[in-house]
Amino acid sequence: MAELLQQVRVLNPQAGTDSLADVLIEGDVLKAIAPHIDPPADADVIQAKGLVLGPGLVDLYSQSGEPGFEERETLDSLTRAALAGGFTRLSLLPNLVPVIDHPAALMALRDRARSVPLNCWGALTLGTHGKQMSELMELAEAGIVGFADGQPTENLVLVRRLLEYLRPLGLPVMLWPCDRQLASDGVAREGSISLNLGLPGIPDMAETAMLSALIECVREIGTPVHLMRISTARSVELIRRAKAEGVPITASTSWLHLLFDCSDLAGYDPNLRLDPPLGNPGDREALVEAVRTGEVDAIAIDHSPFTYEEKTVAFGVAPPGAIGLELALPMLWQQLVASGQWTALELWLRLSTAPARCLRQPPPAMNVDAPLEMTLFDPQLRWMVTGERLCSQASNTSWLGQEICGKVLRTYVNRVAP
Image (cartoon, rainbow, N blue to C red; front, side):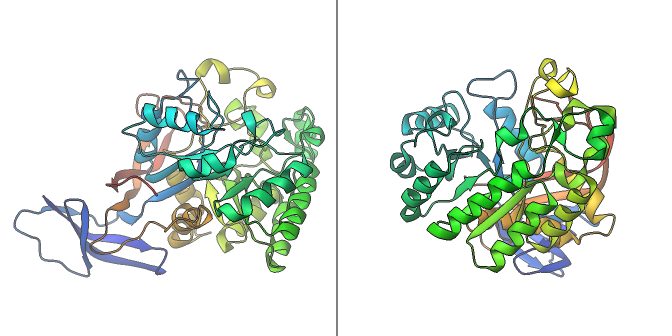
């Protein structure tokens, strides 16, 4: 069965093009993109004016409930949420039960997810506790996407040894710059706003001190590293300088750190309790510009599901994290693209091409005669965010019960992500 999208807005970040075109799809293959295509006799013709078609979105890191916390999220609901949000590639952090710190855990997860196209990060350390190396070589041979704990690795002697050991393996290595001792019991970014709100503050240096140390480790050893969960303006400055000096690093921030800052915490919404916390207004502004220009390479979703009971508590005791796979594209589009701050290509690049490059994967492409990996998005469609409308089993989001603008209509994918 053929499908013809007529006069759809086609975004191609790799080619740097944004144009109206007809797009012909036959079966599981993109057959043609042209200014005008005569409909085949059996084609399903869709008037797509006002719709946006781009390469599939790629998430660098997210979290599942299953296995271990199926009441939060199952692998099936997680995958449906990813597809509903336009994501054709999804990579799970290893902090599951059991932790993916040896090949047997990875095999067990794959057995549970036979029909689910997931990539998995392998743990750098046993139990992600940051004390002892996991079975790195065995995990690499088992087919993980890369190495990460999803937790701060604060033992710099161990970090150095890990980078030395992992360099010849050639897989992505992802580290989170965070010093838990400096963060102490803080729940918000330190500053006048957190002080006025009565929320214990986390100083910038809880991130930047460890970031500086990690950059020095990478500079000396030469193993490329991806720096996750960047959240401060000072971190942007350190990353900019290190890149200019040739240090082999890439970086990402979460989508929520581009949309909110700590001035949005006045309502003490536990769904805005994040780790790292939302920055001060200057941090958000610096991150928005750094991601737009590529100084911070990619946007991560860091989908973190929790139950209603876990999140319906006081702000300071709520577990940090929020869902985002179904909401990131529409909300980023409305705040950054519709407002004129970013172009549509700039947003799509940071959600698709750039994350794939950070994973050292070929980016999703709009190539004729290639397997389908595309997202069809309606930036004007309004819908109500409810537990029933969300594909995710979890509903810990600040937009619950609100009407938002923008929705993915279809995600085209016919293969497991690389």
